[in-house]
Length: 179
Image 1 (cartoon, rainbow, N blue to C red):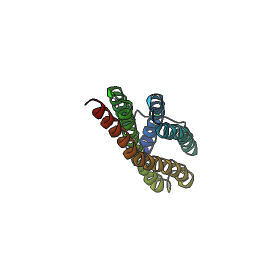
Image 2: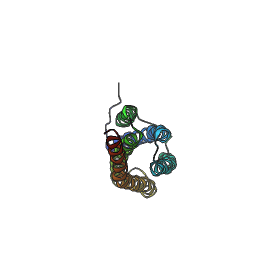
Image 3: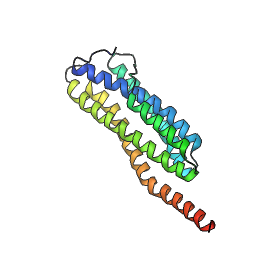
Image 4: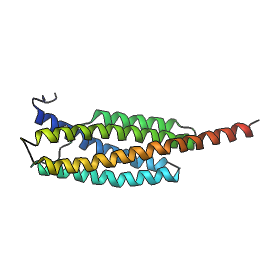
C-alpha cells in the first residue's frame, strides 16, 4: 500500500523521487535505442543526451544531498509506460528508416515528460524553499536539467522531418523499383 502524501513537502519529495526513477529508466531505454538506431545524427543525439542524463542524475543526487537526504527513487509509472511503448514500436518497425522515426518520436515524448516534471519541481522548490531548504542551489540544479531537456526536445523536433523525409524517399524508391 502506498504511503499517503500529506503535505506539499512530501509531494515535492515524491515528485523528486519520481523523476529520479524516470531518469534511470530513460537512460537505460536510450541505450536500447542507440543500439538499434541507424541514422548517424540520431545516434549522435542519443549519445549526447545519455551523457546529459548521467549529469542530470548527478544533479538530482545533489538536490537530495542539499536537502540532507539520501536519493530515493519512487517508481515512475509514466516512465515505465513510455519505455515499454518505445520498445514495442521499435520492434514492430519493419524498416530501419521508419524505426529511426519511431525512435525520434519516442525520445521526444520522454523529453516532454521530463520537462513537465522539472517545471513542477522548480515551482515546488521556489515556494517550499522559503520554509524547508536552500531553494537557490536546488533550483539551479533543477533549472540546468530542465534547460538540457528543452534543448534536446528542440533538437529531436527539428530532426523529425528529416528522418520522415528519409523514410518516405526510401518508400518511394521501393515503390518505383517494384513497378
